[in-house]
Image 1 (cartoon, one colour):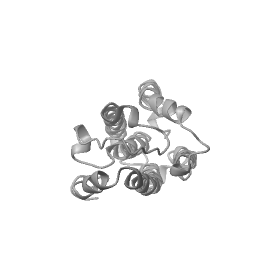
Image 2: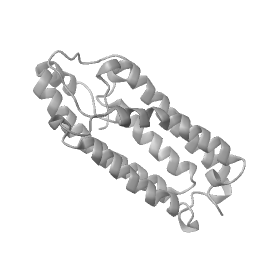
Image 3: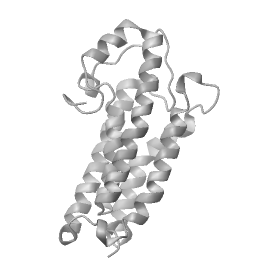
Length: 194
């Protein structure tokens, strides 16, 4: 059985949703500075390459029946995946708005940069990375493959964990105590857990 993102009419919904969700992501990557930014420690490249490899594995894996999620409920699973991907994208766009010009594809920090504590940032330190992880897991679920969802989720967490370490180091060095205080009052990715 082919994954529903490759079956008519589900393919239309999936690919429209996919391009809508990821268009802002591609713009952020295009506008980022790949070279000359030591603060980034190549974290942008880690995210891009890590996710490309994960997607290169996730799509073929989705065609293997042994990895399908509840085949009898594949339509419901597809829509749950779509809702997860779209919800992640909406949260990510919210984070873009909250951070304004401070949101960049690569890690940059300035001493005069304000610590944003409103919106999703009132709950988490890095809700944009939570959102990215949800978007990627949503694709795996929409593909109807638990293995694809796990591969995309684990890779997302791994690449974002590296980015978080780089970003927090840069923000602490540039902003200092206000960011240290922000870090002590919020979890990184999952409210009240991690």
